[in-house]
Image 1: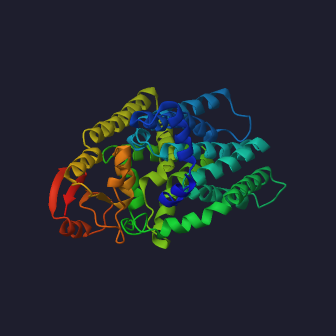
Image 2 (image 1 turned 30 degrees about the horizontal axis):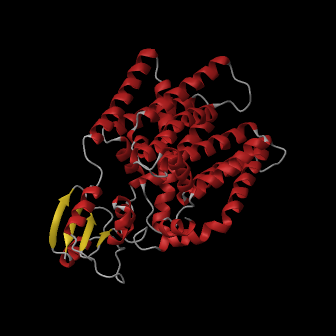
Image 3 (image 1 turned 135 degrees about the vertical axis):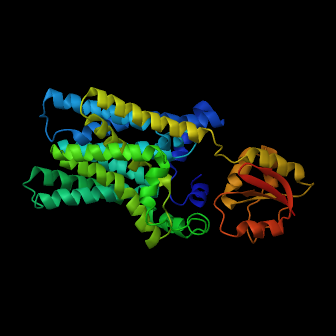
Length: 420
């Protein structure tokens, strides 16, 4: 498993794969069973959004009035509700992929990060170290998490004069040490897979294009909906301004940092290293955005305005889900494989482009017919039938494949079956 995983997923360690393996042992290999694991993590993240909101706005000590604590719980409940009805996280909770696990792990790590800064304690520091290692090992794009937290620690230490006699500075140093421990845990496995991930043809270089400079803004617009985003953004801005005036500047500033740092870091890495601006790599940046939306709802004057704003936010968010579900977003690989199999003559084989989709072909083929599918490549023996996906193809590639495979066997949603 380790060798195969390193070949197919050089940007991660097999944490999700091992978790899924255990889940399959109990619930089977059907798509519904495997997607249920992601759905379970999706449900857990709703609770984690509540917890992280409570930690974000919690007073620095056990002080604070009963009304303050009740207000924080209400803001946290609103944040969990806004999160729960937004498409950007729902759609990944429907897929048998690592991203719901990654999001849950990141939110748990940030919760422990905030708790360690607020209350200290060895258990919280240990939680930061362990969860950071798990997060980064799940997918190396999550290196943006400790990088963002490092910026906040730098802010705390600068403000406190770097003095160990300052309680906040001591806690910041301790959290920094916990992040360093997580880095030491990952050092043996970190750099070679990262190098492979940035040089493998077709994984990062080749079909991904450098993002536009406005991509961080477009990220939130596309993910939450072109009609919903202006509403959510206006409510979030109102929450930032209102809470800032009321003195909760650290909480607001940290939420803004957690929201904007991931897309900006991905943008910088895309130009400095290789194109890595992918929505699913920054799922966690939507959580602080939704927290700020919840804050804006709470800061509305009066229960009627607050309720109307909540209904408006929920209505636009749900309408985005409905609009998304009305359009197909999958590729008909199962049907394509059936058509390709029917087009094969005895002794002939099929292949697929993009080449990494070979595992999809092997998944749907019967166990005794796996040798009918071969990896596409210059050195491979020519296949009689090509399954051509519509996504992740280099510009102009379709024409070259069609010259090599001029006969169209089947046109399906998201995929075309061609024959020599």
